[in-house]
Length: 588
Ligand code: PMP
Image (cartoon, rainbow, N blue to C red; front, side, top):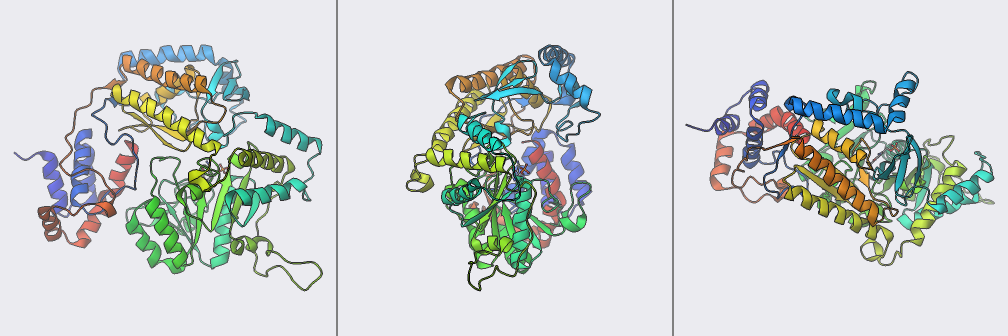
């Protein structure tokens, strides 16, 4: 008798079935069945589920255990959670009490983020007392090795003396906002010198930087649409918040963001070369392509060739290419992802690291675009005037002296610690050392995960890294892992990005390694990882980017070509792609 998965795959491949039917059948399959079906569809449908170029450390792993989720909880698991809650409560009572006491007044969208009902008693942010070097202390005096990296801001550790000194001195001079300071000019000059951009302006946050960069691009091109990529993050402004449905139409994903705004955004798959055709076809409408070169949520995706193609195409079509370097900027190397990949964007957005912890953003790029903000250069004593065509970009705290002092001090430190000889590849900079430390940490722990058959992997890029639970997305086991990690003296950020800084010494890194190992062993012992049935991969089903796929075996090509018209293939893809992708994304 035919295997039911093969039968279903065959039906999908040969018959026109409704979305409902396809999705219902898919949903009713056991997990391994879903994986197998996806593999068969990938094998038979050109381009189906193609993924960008990856260095996914988990892809060659032997079969692993499976993290249990909320539905699998037995009494013993519940008891483990009860005991943990009691211990946690004893450890961080002030943080918990603060949240309860002030929640009527204090609003923060992170509070319910990733909330799992069964772990509600354990789900709250810590209140911090102070931070120094690689450590942070909570309101109850517990010390943690901080790998939250302050969401990517922190590269020199907390309170580096050069930064404290610069901000204190600026404070002593007062905080006048209307005029310029010497530091404003010096910071701008140094920023351009390090990054290679022609001109720069300060903003108040990363979100604002992206908003202004897109505005400049629209003003320059007089076009409306912007292209961005699935699973990228560019802040939460109305300019960038959209998802796309199976037919490629953009829709608003956040209540309060107008559908009319979403319709100006074309959302494409990151790394999919075929989607570049769409940019080419609609070039006349597109003001800019906005790229998060290495998505912080997927640090293993580094679609270098794709990025080079995007650069080529945007130059050809006079579309402004914007690199969002909020996290990659100054982290992977002093010239950011642009230096790392050897691609110069027209505009780039920054924040985080250069601000040294003060609220900062930066937009930088070619003079021909930046001049649209202030009219460019002109002289005194002659007839020259600013360029007439200008857009509006400003803010009260744009050049706040405390922040400017922090930027100047941080950039000076970066410059002093980077030889800048021979560009990003060969220069002897502090980031290299930091990147190496991160790689070693990731490799050591990935080795541990493999040896213990744990469904966890660390993805990393530069000194950014993330724990990724395979075949699960924020299930109870993952949530407990991060809580246990905290109880082992390691602080992370609920959003998932982790970072090393120059302040992390060997002892700190050992604390992280031991903390991760201990937390996972505790969960193993308590039965939070179960044996998962082994699913044999159908031959040839290894996932490779569509553009890199080897010619398909003759019989498969004939089967698809004869049985399905191109229209049917497209329809089928549209029918189930969103759901399958949701499954893939959700499950790892
Ligand atoms: N772009 C990227 C790539 C980011 O990572 C972030 C913040 N994490 C932003 C934009 C928004 O920056 P901010 O939170 O400073 O507004």
